[in-house]
Amino acid sequence: MAYSVNLTTRQEARLRRIVRENQDNPHVLKRVYCILLKNEGQKNKNIIRLLDVHADTITDWTKLYLKRGLPGLLTFRFDRRRQSSLNPYLSRIRRVAGLKHITTIRQLQLALNQRFSLSVEYSWLYRYCMKNGIYDLLREGADHEN
Image (cartoon, rainbow, N blue to C red; front, side, top):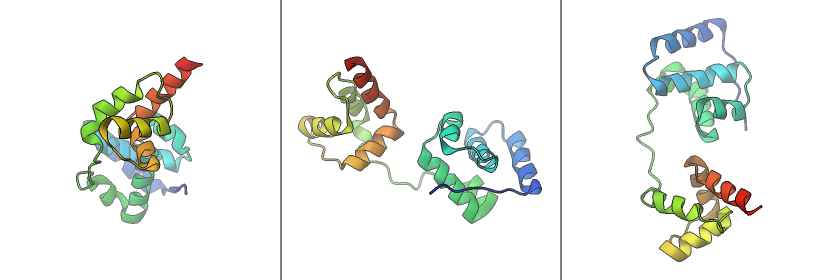
């Protein structure tokens, strides 16, 4: 479900002032720019490219702003989120994903199970790969095969 933002002129001016005042805080800037871009009617695909964030992040920030307003958006912290159990394996997952014969999430899933006894549900592995740039490695491998 795509969430939309409709700012008043006053709200938009306040967000633009926050942008000017927070040039040294990239976390705040990205969140505020996300809301401003959503207000302009930008699609998530464009915001992902412009801000270099995951689609889930855009949804999180938009929902947070709609629910808690500007104070919630400015004080949002990721540190309370649970870390993925795959994080200790990140470099190994990247290495396996870079192998020429591994070109799909399913193949990566099987290889991780065989090599490291990691049993990961497909959807979780897919999201992890998307968030950590691993999916692009798989696509590169597929491109080299063709």
